[in-house]
Image (cartoon, rainbow, N blue to C red; front, top):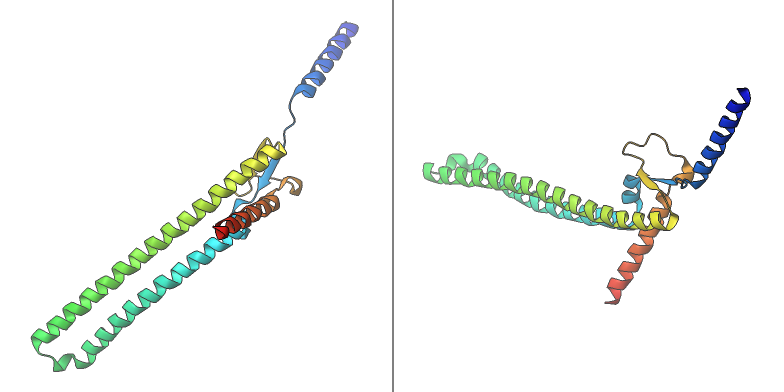
Amino acid sequence: MKRLFSMFALVLLISASQAMAAAPAVKLGAVDLQRAVKECREGVAARADLQKKIEQFNAELKLLQVDYQRLSTELEKDGGKFSADRRAEKEATLQKKGRELQNRQREAQEDIKQLESDYLKRVVNRLGAIMAKIGDEGKFTAILDRNNGLLYAGKEIDITSLLIQRADDEFTRLRRKNEER
């Protein structure tokens, strides 16, 4: 009986080792996509463009605010000198300017959110395409984002630096190509 059990265990062990030898190797990669977006040249350029747009919106809003403040001060100082009709006209103008300022602030915030979303989407899409190439070339089974549910990833499988380097190379190549046109 022992001999039969030993033979069965040996056959099972040989079968298991053959099955494991035939199974494909699993190769995982991990990437910090937030870091890649933040550090790659395209991401840096996108943030710089966004910052310029924010500064433009702020300058525009500051002009509207100065105009509103000027009218408010004028009404406060000289309001007693105006006729009732003139004062009512100035107050109506001030209220209109206040609404314009609030509307433009709201529009600017929405525009900034949309620009930020567009920039992020463009950079992430490009990084996704590059990641697919890296995955194919490196024969990765999966590449996981460190910030979305990954509990552990050793440094030896982190390909964020490779992704940033490839993204920078592609960004430089595309920029040169566009400059040649």
